Image (cartoon, rainbow, N blue to C red):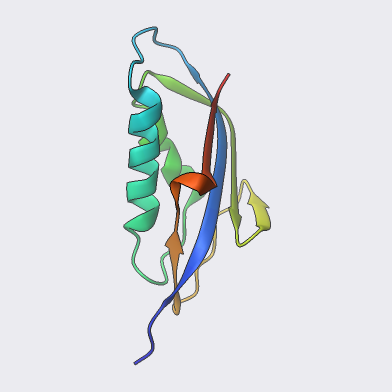
Length: 100
């Protein structure tokens, strides 16, 4: 039995709110994305396209830019591959959301 090790994930996004009623939307997006990534089991990849479902419901958010990276390696618009001995970890410091 070996314990899985954390892999630091970074996510950067530019979003635009299409709904003027978007109070609390940034915070809700941050919480939803962090819950998704940090809730993945060991060995589960961070799927790029899955992130949209955690972003777009809030304030009718339009994603203009979305980049992923793992441990400083830029994945860009690709999934982050996590080995069976690792798990993804996303902190608030590594989640950059910019409203454009």
